[in-house]
Each structure stands twice: as structure tokens, then as C-alpha cells.
Length: 221
Image (cartoon, rainbow, N blue to C red; front, side):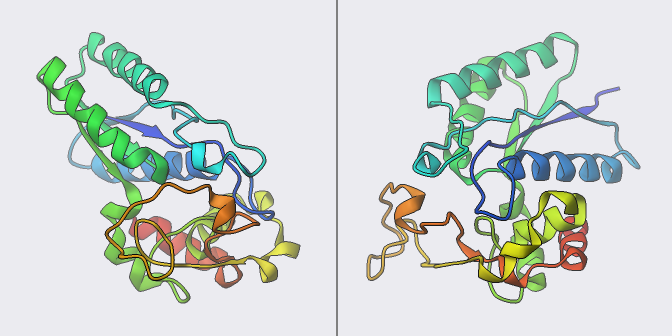
């Protein structure tokens, strides 16, 4: 029926002492299913199983991370998309839930579009919903990492996965810009391990999280 297939991709990586390693994949899955339910009122939509690994080399300095390199992620994505196409679908949207995947996915989607001559698309959910997310946050301007936003959404979705005893201590520095280095021009990018930015692997303020806020975020996204 000319359905749009949503293919979520996340990552498996540390998210501070208070959250599990599956945060990005679980949130991408939740957003995909909620979006598909809304879309299906006017157009058929199918959610494929989530790819649980992504490009997380910058998290390897902190425990619990499994990372793919570019070639492997491109191969996995290509195999998944080709399988979907062989079953007759023509439109695929790759829904991203991990910042380390963003630039690579844009390149991969370009390659897939040229190869198959079909309308592939991708987007990272917090970029798509940036304005809606910003309006709901108290301590941050955007979704960061193991932060007010991610912690709130996990609390709403699966509260048993959050360690409440740790929340009051879960604060990490937020330095804007591509390099996240003080005094460096915000347009300059320099690769860094996350542990050099936050020893506990938190960027933002998880102490401001709540399940109520999380449900509002998920609904808005």
C-alpha cells in the first residue's frame, strides 16, 4: 500500500551512572512507534526492528559502549534497506537516535538514494523537534547526553531503568559549539572522547528530570 518504512537506529553506550546503555536505541524505537501511530491515520507506516549499534567511538573511554566503524554501519544499513526494498517497499525513513550517527547517516542516505534511485530520508529526532524540546526544558536549551531530556523520557517510558538515588548528582558541563572547548569558535569541530568533557559521562542536568516532563517530550517529538 505504498507504506513508509521507518527504520530506527540508535547506539549502545554509557549514559552516566543513572541510566542504562540502551537509552538511544530505546528512545529511537519509542519515537518511531509513536510517529507511526500518528502517521497511520492518514498513511500506512511500518516500523522496522531497531538497529541497536551505531558509531560511538567517542564514548569508548567510558564503560558499556559497543561501537561500529563507518564501513560496518554503512554495510548494515545497506543490507537492511535492500532487504526492505526487495519486499516491495519504496520509501524508507531512517530515524536516528544517536548524535554520533548523524553526519555518517546523511552521507549514507545520499549513497543509497543514488544507488537505488528512490526517496530515502533520514533525521535525528531531536533536530526535527528542536523547538518543541526547547520549550519543555528548564535547565538546558537542547537535548544533550544522559541529561534532563533523555532522563525524563526514560523515566516516562521505563522508570525501572533509572537509578533515582543518583539523579541529584547527575550534572555535566555544557559548552556550546562543535568542539565543546571553551573559547574555541563554535563552528570549529574537533573530535574528543566524552570522558574528557565529563568524567561521569553526563552532559546537561539530569537532576531536573521527571516522568511528567518525559511524557510531554515524547508526545511533542
